Length: 91
Image (cartoon, rainbow, N blue to C red; front, side, top):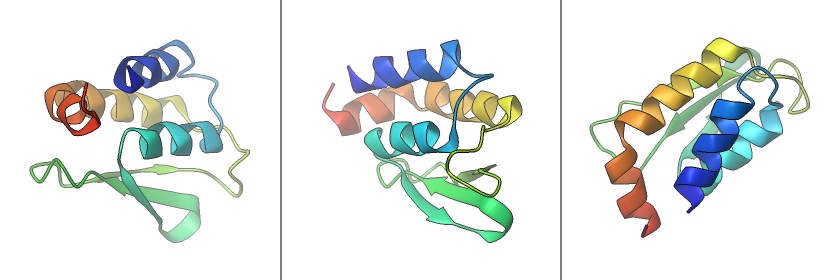
């Protein structure tokens, strides 16, 4: 249920999502997120060892909008690892 909820959110609002919304979605899906330079966030998932991790840019604040190309990349990741994510979430 979480997988479908957040996939739908990311897909439907991919051109209008704040950083805090993206952080919540990834965190609720089980991703581990850490800060990097220049407002970038790095994310990995402990249940997906084959996924090397990726990043997106939050700008200067978690209230800033995340650019659509980053959201498309996140969607690509969660689509590619749908089975693993659902398993990790117990869905």
